[in-house]
Structure formats: C-alpha cells, structure tokens
Image (tube, rainbow, N blue to C red):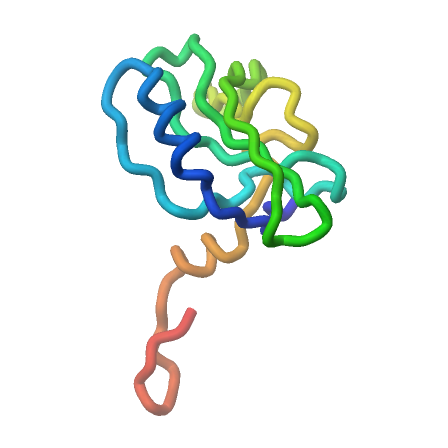
Length: 136
C-alpha cells in the first residue's frame, strides 16, 4: 500500500500550545506535515505524528486534518492518541516491530505502507548519465 501524499501547513500556534503541555523537550515543529497513513478515501482524516510520548505506553501527540473543499482551508485537530497495539513478529530472528500509527487507524499498519519517494531518495545513486549527473 502506498503512503497518502496529503500535505498540510501545521497550525503553529496550536501546535506549540499542545507541545508545551507535554513533559520533556519541546522541539520546534516543521512548517508542514505529510500524512503518514496509507492511501485512503477523501472523507477520512489525514494524520501526522507531531511528537511521541516520553513513555511508549503513553499516547502520542498527533495532527489530524481534513480538506474542506479546497486545499487552502483544511480543518486541523491536534490530539493525543494511543499507539496501535499491533505488532509484526519476524519468525526467523524472533524480532517484533510495533505499528507506528495510532490505535484504530483507518488504513493498513505502518509496515504495510511504502513511501516511494522516500525509497527513491534513500536509493543508491548511480552515475550512468553521460553528463555525470547522479540519478537513482
């Protein structure tokens, strides 16, 4: 499943207010957030992790948003949400991988979601170009 490509401008005032209420360090948020869910239908909220909790058993701070007809006027909501309890168990090495999304997320688990742009950026660059420019 491919990752959703929705992007939104983070409501900075609301985000900073929410971050201040959490214990620990308060990193400066980036100005934009990318939906971390897999591709989903339009009426479903988009979601981006703003900050995990200091304790993995505590809820994380998430930004949820929906478009209201135009990309320039999304509706934002900042809220805490518990982590998804699902884990992927690798039988060959007995390792476990917890889902990195919130509980009851509407799409596949985080290990089912692929980010083709991220894969492209992280891929090995070659220089087969006649002018010596690197490309994936």
